Amino acid sequence: MKVMITVTHLLGTGHLSRALTLARAFDAAGHEVLLVSGGRAAPHLHPGHLGWLQLPPLASDGTDFTRLLTDAGAEADAEYLEARRIALRHALTGFAPDILITELYPFGRRALAGEFLSLLETAQDQTPRPVVLSSIRDILAPPSKPSKAGRAEEIVTRLYDAVLVHSDRHATRLEQSWPVTPALADKLRYTGYVAPPAPVPHPQGLGAGEVLVSAGGGAVGGPLFRATLEAARLRPALHWRLLVGGSDPALLTELQAMAPANATVEAARPEFRQMLPHSAASVSMCGYNTAMDLLQTGTPAVLIPFDAGKEEEQSLRAESLARLPAVEVLRSADLTAPALVAALDRALAAGPRRDSGLKFDGAAQSVAIATQMAKARA
Image (cartoon, rainbow, N blue to C red; front, side, top):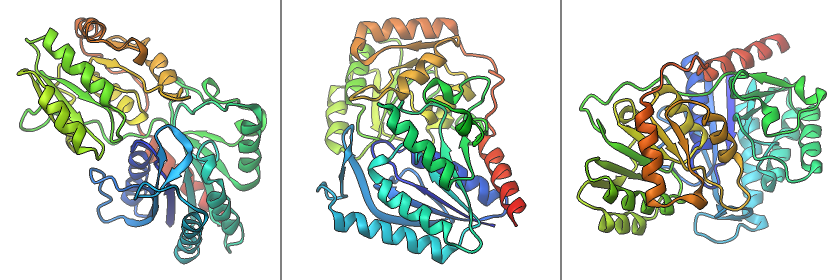
């Protein structure tokens, strides 16, 4: 079968990473995949041999997701956005997928509703019509007003066959962050968490015994990294390794100049997941993909959820993980070097976690659900 997945990451790269994991699962099952990316380039995420289409890229203006910027940093105008809509429609009609998956929409990316609705309406006119699915993570940004939830449900009811919820229903249900009516509940298909296979320790032992500090692939980790370097001075017996993502070389240079002798500051590494299993602890934000890595490895963790602007997703996820042993949560407003060291000491004392029993085969289950629906339609 042919599978088209469309995703636009606007701030960090977690959405693209999760879409890539899904795409690779479809590819591994023998299906032809086209992944359409509408965000800026993320060099550490490689599509490999997968079919790939890059739309004219967009990014948010910080946490203002209503103001969309081009790759050059200018505000995207109507002509720029129309070029994206045309490219999406051409990709759909040219590729003719059996399965169409939109990542996050219509539960988010409302600023891009025009291009998504254009894509979905075009899909309705195809013969045969593809199975249309929405792909969403465990925790969503709660709607700021009831009308937004109502609009999302109307679109799902009219244009989608199902919603793939990438969560273990026994751990986190959609109701924790989004109002679920009976009509919406009928569309939900819980897949388990979408994560790559559990990482094995790095063959060269990179990261062994270290405190690994990360902030995803975006450019919002400055305060976390600076506080961590101050904390490193308070715990000189520990070696701290900061993996700095994003595309701001000035931040990396600044942090390297600040680093004490017991801290290494370098660009984000693609083998980060292999470093986690034998690291002493992790200090990070609480995006979906990072949470999956920590749940799979059992690494002691201090979570500082990203909560700038009106962001609530990471805070809600961190609250749900705080019940686990060796997981400490520190609000960004409380982030100081002494508070971070205290939280780290508690996480280290609790030791590595044992198997959580949660389901991490969400990518394979998504493939099974989607292909079964497509076969039933045929």
